[in-house]
Image (tube, rainbow, N blue to C red; front, side, top):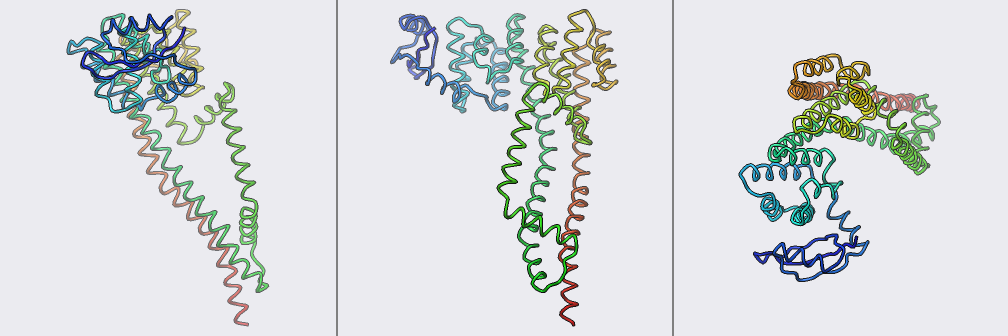
Length: 404
């Protein structure tokens, strides 16, 4: 179906614009007139325009902006405002140009007869499948405002958890990079200068000095080979990790890393419980909820467990049974979910599981941060001691030679 770009003015004289799919230009003009728009221009949208609009205008949106959008829309709907009025108001007040364009397009689609979920579905990069499924369930149940409030709460919890985990991993990453840069500078620039002095004085260098000297000269002369090699290695790992089998092995290694692995597992379990609770409470079918979880849980190892859970539930089993068999979920989590299924309070119990593991993640991060500092100090102390020994030992030999 042809795509047309239009420019118009609404009833208040405010300029509006966007793109719309219609069989003919005449039908587009008729639709816009029924919406009360005064048309100022219509043109066929070329493929290059559509691509730029898709990438530049309708890409992913900042999570904070999406949370605020859900809160605003929920509050307006709860206050009794019509959906179209709410969308227009939010679009006019939005300062983010990319989100403004997206909301204008969603508004136009709703005005032309699409449901909100159908309008959101046209922008999969901005609105996740979780969002679309929950909005669709809210429209079917007549509780769209409540569902949007749950979606905003979920987004806030998700963002907070992600920031905690990324913050915990950022600290050791920054320290590692800084320490590596300092060590490389000493090895490639400082030690070779000292070594040249000792070699000209015909003083034999100890083994550790010879090793560091050789490493420094090699890195300095062939640094581009190391850079190319590391780049090729990381690209190969990235490509391998994008395959299904490779992603599984990489995620399995992540979960097996001491200290970091348990943190990632706790964060994934908290995400699993919070998302399943939010979807279930919003009226999304359990099989559809598990299908969404399969692609959004963030770890291929646990994703395959979710696949088995979905297959078991389709066959009439409870969620807790395949979770227990998998061995990937802790026994306390499985027991709490089983208790929720027995009492009919699965949503409440899943929320408690999420609260428990989010608190565990926060504690784990504090513990990790407190352990990393002395660990890095110890490692750096050992490295500095080796480097200082490689410099001081030849200096003592030089002093002996000068005394003679």
